[in-house]
Image 1 (tube, helix red, strand yellow):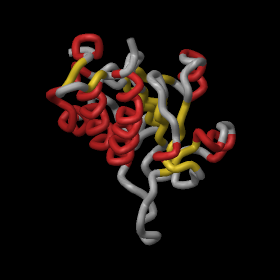
Image 2 (spheres, rainbow, N blue to C red):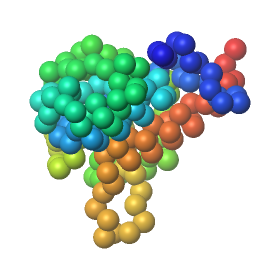
Image 3 (cartoon, helix red, strand yellow):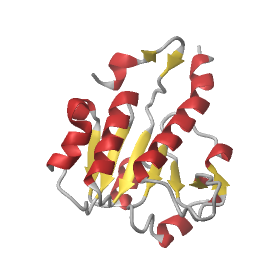
Length: 175
């Protein structure tokens, strides 16, 4: 079932239109991408994968994690981040990094935004982070300094649902 077929969910929640986008830059671990694909299917979020991928998207591990939902994922694969940006020049890009100075909860999300995550081992490239305004480079607060970062699929879920929470009020109040 695609985004247009499920605008309403729950009691009074409206999915954003245009939908949000999750971007994975050079993902390496198939189960993370599979979990994120399931998240995208459940929320009508477009999933963009930036090559090179550390696996083939037809791999059993990717499909197993999102198997029941794989056909419901609006998936796009791009040869580079620049190619994604040229196809979606108006889309605001929010980058997620442990180096981000803006808390996820301070960012102001809108329908159509792109939530961008780096590869599991190294995150986003420094040059990509430097090329974006500091208020668009977000971190997800972590209580203990001994915890370096969270799992990629957890980060994507946290960020996406915070964006949906913020957008919900604006979408419901629209005429």
